[in-house]
Amino acid sequence: MTAADPVTTEVVRNFVTACAEDMNAALWRSAYSAVIYEGRDSAVALLDSKGNMLGQSTGVPLFIGAIDACVHHVMDYYGEDIRPGDVFIMNDSYLQGTHLHDVTAIGPIFHGERLVGFGAARAHWSDIGAIDPGSTMGSTSIYHEGLRLGPTRIISAGKPIREWYDHLRLNTRLPKCSIGDLNAQIAAIKTGQRRLGQLLDRIGPDVYDAACQNIFEQARELDRKAIAELNEGTFYREGCLDDDGFGDEPIKVAVTLTIKGEEMVIDLAGTSGPVAGSVNCGAVQTVSLLRLAYKSMINPDRAITGGSFETMKVKIPDECVFNAREPAACEWYFTGLGLLADLMISCISEAMPERATAAHYGDSMVSAYFAVDSERGSWIAIEPTAGGWGARADGDGEDALINLVNGSFRNMSAEIYETKFPVRVERFAFNPDSGGPGRWRGGCGVIRVFKMLEDCHGALWFDRSVTTAWGLAGGSSGRGPANCITFPDGSVERPLKMRARPLPAGTIVETTTGGGGGYGDPMARPCENVQVDVRRGFVSREEAAKQYGVHFNDDLTVDGARSLPRSA
Image (cartoon, rainbow, N blue to C red; front, top):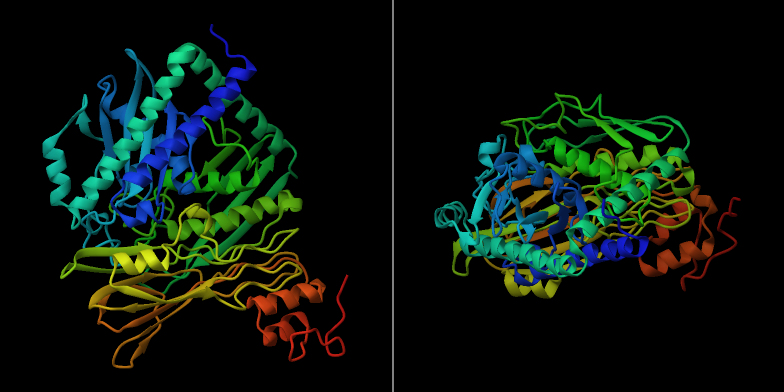
């Protein structure tokens, strides 16, 4: 059997990661939709011939742990009928776990006649033909949410299948963008094929396969060692989503984590069953989220590979909001995943207190504005919003950072927003006092104010006002989200969730995201740290006095006579 020495293994490890970064660059530079080339709502991966993860790039980390499942679906469906030059796409919520907007493109990689791997690129298409443009907040069935595709060959032996391209064009309000984004995904796959081919020409497929096996085994060994070093025990956490977008009943999310020896078992028993609204999530994506939460705490400096997570077992009840079955609506599948991540991390924090982390603001907090067949043509502006992250055992939480499930997703700059859409960004600022007080302060959320310059429609989806970001070790919870819509006639509405509705020109929409939980006793926070927070606008003078017992003079120097002494 061919072997790969340690040096070659490291070359392969770094090469496949660099290859994935090149693939992502090709995707971002070629995409038509701003949500991809500006927001980076995408992920790419390089996998081996059996569909095991090898190389990945920055992007939406939630996608990474589920892309291998898509490759396996293609392999199972097409079997031996996979040829050089083929490209397959799929978006079925029950197979890949996400909503239908997330289209995964997959292409085999051959070296000569030998299948050596796969390249994959997932990206959010701006419109997939749902009952509302962009992402609908009103679905109660998968059949409301747009075109649904199982594994589908879109290019056969290098030749595009015309009828499938026509079918895609006919089922989206933005055909130019959708086909352009698909071609960008194909460009990413071809980049991976070309780059990997360069390596295989140098070392050959046998040495490459041997290096891959070394990489997988190293990942297994590191995970086993890390789990064995954790405190053993059973840890439980629960919380609630606000609602499913239709009723006002909170949706319970429960996590039981058991650590014994080199194994970690995660059980979601006690979590609410399927709901009428669109927060149901496919099991594949649920497992991917739990892997992400695990990875954020366990060996976070090592890349995910096909050898990762073998120490982690997941149990999901059949009747569960995180185990969506047809015809459950899944458009906002990621709403519950943000809370699930926080609960999982809190459980792990008990087993490794040196890395304990308070909860973050959690939800993606999505705002969307759009018009169909307006004077500008059809346009859709949609993106998540940053918020505050939880403080940790040795530092403050991050301010204005996108939530865990979205990773490298970025808010569009005001300049891009105002250039591409008839919307003016009136304000983008930190949300003061939103971070939970503590020895280490929770991160602050943000305030964004938009003015509609033309008649259009708007939609909102904000959660985590019921279970806000909790603190740890005596730290307080962060504040939750809030929205305010002021119409030209002076009327005001404050919805957290709102299905597409008309917004006349001149309407002002103010969205506010929550902050992260604090860590430790607020009275132990040094006065000088509170002073910096006040000067930077993270904490108001009133809250500094109320929460931290620190008072200030008019010039913002600390009033030592009125301020309370610091605790140990």
